[in-house]
Length: 467
Image (cartoon, rainbow, N blue to C red; front, side, top):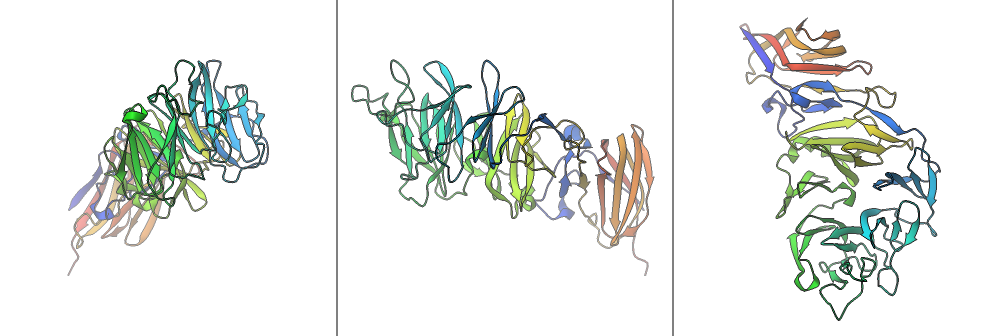
């Protein structure tokens, strides 16, 4: 009997079930591939955006893009200094007066007295403000705002902050700007209590400190080490503090991403979402359960560009970059390069790597000159009929590019076939081998690039065992 095993379109990674049950459009194991428009291609690589390396020997901790009318500025926070680049050249812009211990930074763009600033928090020194030229002190002791906080966010025109080691549950809020008031003043105002600053205690236990803040349009989310709270209201008299989740996984503040007033973030269990009411694991989080097994999300980074979310995690000492398509609800995986931190600028992902270069993702067919290793593996399947023997006959595919390596596996034997050229015509690849379980692997060869259009068709001869 002749049987056609077809993949109509390529979608993404699915590790939510045994491979035998998977839709063949999904892969249980794929790396550095793209499935845009349902086609399968080797994903684009990256190029160096700033040719010069970040100077110094200090360990890199953060990459920030500060948007200014005069032109954006890249800032790189290292353990020895902050370096700035606006024209491809790096300058040492700021040195900490005393060495830090944790080097855990948070930033937020604000307006103070009609001037744009980047506020920088580290939890060990008072806040710093940067206007694109100078680093200046923020607030003062008289305004009760010289407090070393680690997390900052703007909500309802006020600055909210947390992460004071001495008061790990304390949430600070500034005065409402206007008149002679600004967000640099966190003090009380007996004459106008609705515009005053102050603080709230979020929860009771120091073992559950605040670890992240993020603002949605109607509420401020307060992530603690083991729980989640939210605050809504626009002045102290109507602030309401509620617990959203009593038990939650720890969230890295650098992994939180917004899309359409929804907060997404990554934990060791996978992709999470706060939809304005509930914080929960995404319904398709199990599609990457094997990727997340043993992953470290303590220093995870998250960004959004166009219709995709990107999250960097650690697998051992290596970076894995998870890509999630918000429209198609599919995951892909990138690896083979290091990501220390990443940002989004003009819907393009920029990241800084272990060679101290800022790179631009999804450009070129190499990793800044190094070859990309990419493959897509089909589910291992017995086609729902364990008793029959499946014999490979031919594979039909169409696409463009060169040096696509096809590996067939059945009966415990792997056979490799190199397709040297794809020229948008249907290619017939004669195959050999038989067994009860089949699997294909489509890969590039020595860094090559290719694209398959319209799915693939595998012709099999199926027979029962002779008695």
